Length: 190
Length: 190
DNA sequence: GGGTGCATGTAACTGGTTACATGATTCC
DNA sequence: GGAATCATGTAACCAGTTACATGCACCC
Image (cartoon, rainbow over all chains, first blue to last red; front, side, top):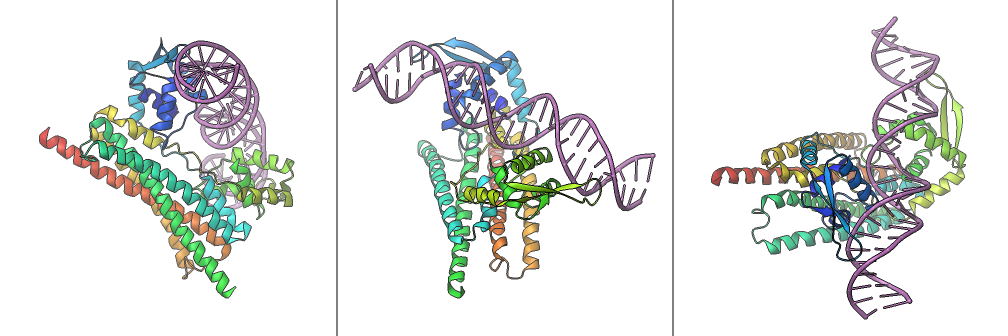
């Protein structure tokens, strides 16, 4: 279960469940998601296993917060995971499933609209990631080659996000051209 | 639930659960997976809903097989799904989670080995998809621009698979270069 | 007094995996 | 007789989502 290991990894810095949710949403959303309702019980479980230690702390507002930190045992578990075999992740891609079956509609203009809407979404995701990259480059004029060690691995993953979404946008453009060409052909000798 | 709709879509041609499993594994593995233990109960459920009709048929070997076909009601459900909003799918990418946290190991050679092994896997996936594309091109000299309508949408998804995996390989290469450069720098003024 | 943000949780459900169980037929 | 392939299923489990519940504090 990767979520366990990700939490263990992120908790080198002490943090609460709420803090971790922010990290998921703001910093690593392009490769992992987690809901609070999954994070809280998972933290409790990892604590019971002795991989985390939680302690009460003061909240900015409201009642107390519970801040966790990884234990030496938890740290070992995480390091072992880091060195275990590569897991590729499953590729269930709903938009491809739809597209694959879309000839059923017998209307290429619908396919065109579908691809256009996809492209829009991908393009806005891409813009968001590129903004992050630009911020980094602005803060550090030597970007990307003299980053501190801790940031270097983050850079590699961010670059993955950017490369992948850029490839999606490019594929949308290629596909849109193909569909348009086919529509034009249908119209001319249709 | 996309699996329902995918099965409905694939069952324009009558097929058994076993047949469908072959289709998942051989034809659409690059965007969807399903186990027999999920397929069989799902088919039963869709039949109870009146979206499929199953009938007994003779098996090549062994006992009888059960062959399903979509009903008009099921067909409508699938068409509605095709025209519903784009679903992007979640991106939980275990290999990026690992890489993100891998500075923890404090050894760039481990990162390098990780990326090399990743690249190998992606490259072999890419080769498999490109083989499919080459077979198509061989069978049809006008590939990819004069495909029959039913195949056109399949082409678009296959191209997505190829573009995405190619982008992964390219990102691995970019990353490997970056890691090597950093290792070299460490060694020279280390 | 009401909205927003901080903060933690539970319960029911869904989608999917792993392991197990069964049995016929064909090929070696 | 044994392995491979065809063929269908059940049960237990796991990961993750959605909906719900609670409550404090600060600002308007």
